[in-house]
Amino acid sequence: MLFTFTRTFHASRTVLHLRRHASTSLLSPNHSIYVSSSTNPYFNLTFEDWLFRHKSPEKPMLLLYRDDPCVVVGRNQNPWKEVNLRAAHEAGIPFIRRFSGGGTVYHDLGNTNFSIHLPRATFDRHATAQVVLRAVRSLGVDATVNDRNDICVGKDKIRLILSVTRAVLRSADGRLDIYVSGSAYKIVKDRAYHHGTMLISTRLDTLGELLRSGKDTMETRGIASVRSPVCNLQQHGAQVSHEEFVNAVVNAFREEYGVVEKVHAVDDTGGAQNIEYIRKGMAELKTWDWAFGQTPEFTYKIENTFPWGTVKAEFLSKHGVILSCVLYPPEGAEESVKSGLALMSMVLEGQRYGAADDRPRSLARDSEDLWAVWDWLRKAMDS
Image 1: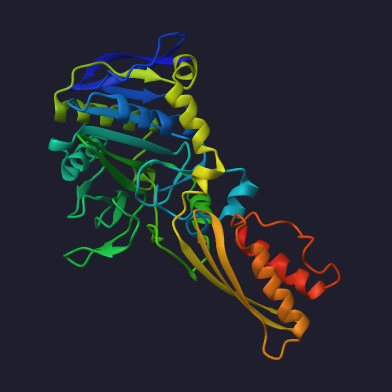
Image 2: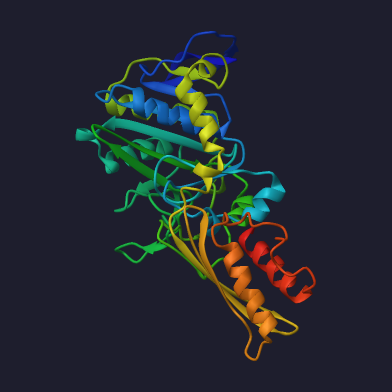
C-alpha cells in the first residue's frame, strides 16, 4: 500500500493529507520529495542509499521516514562499544550499521528522520540546518541554531532537538548544549547529503538503556559517541505529530530550494521488491560481515576476581575477529592454571568476537576453574 498526497493551502502553507491506496508503480529516483510509509529500517536506510547513488546530483532532494525500534550505529563505529547488545537482544530490538558516518542513535515511531541531498558544489551544512530550523519554528516552537549547526529549544535555549554530534559541549556564551539526537553527512564525488533525527515522542527510557554499554575500558579506532542528556520536542509544550513535522519540513524544503513537485510516497512492497540494489542492500545490512565485520580495530581490557584469584584479559580485535587475547593469571597461580589460560588464549585467537565456542574440546574438561574463566570471557564479549 502507498500513500498519496493532496494539497490544500492554509496561511500560505501546504498541508499534506495522506490517503491510502493500492499502487503497482515502480520506484523512481527522479523525484524531489519522498515520504516513506514503511517503518522497516532496513528498507528506509537502503532506499536512502539507493536514492543517493541513483538520483541526479544536480537537483535537491528530500526524504522523510520513521522506523520501528532499532539502534543505528555509524559506518565507522564499534557496536560493542556503542550498544548494550544484551539489552537490545532481550528487547528484540536490532542494531543496524548505516552507510554514513556519525554517532549512534535510537529510532522508534516517536522519532522522525530526514535526509536532504544536494549537489556537492552547493552543499552547506548550515543551510540544511536552517531548513529544519524553519520547520520547527513553523510548529510554534521557539528555536535557534548554534555555531555548530545544532537546533536548540526551550526557555534558556539549552535543549537540542537536532545535533551534529551527541557530545556535551559548552557554547561560546557558556551555555550548556544538551544534545538530543544526531545527524551525519556523506559526500561522494559530486553529491552530498545531510541526514538526522528529530525526537518528537520517542521512548527515552529505552533509548537510554540501549545506548549504555558500560565498556569504559574498550578503546576503539572508530568514531565514538559521547553520552548526553536527551529530551523530546513534545516536552516543550509542542503537541507535534510525525505528520505535522513532515508537513513542516516539506514546506521549508520547498521554500528553500524552489521545489514545486508534489510529494512522492513510497513503501517497501511492490516496486521496491523489483529493484535488485534495494533487495541486496536490505539483505546485506542484516549480515554479520556488515554489522560486525566492518568494526574498526579495538582493544578491551577487563578483569574478574574468582575464589582462587584475579584474572586479567586484554583483547585485540579487528573487523569483528579476535586477533589476540592475552590472559594474565593470578600471582602464585599453579602451573596447570597458567598453561590452561595460555591454551585458552590460543583457542580464542581467530574466532569471531562475541561468538566464541560454547566449550571447546581442546580445553581440559575437568577444570571447573578454567571453565569459569571461559564463561566469564564469553559473557563479557556477548554483552
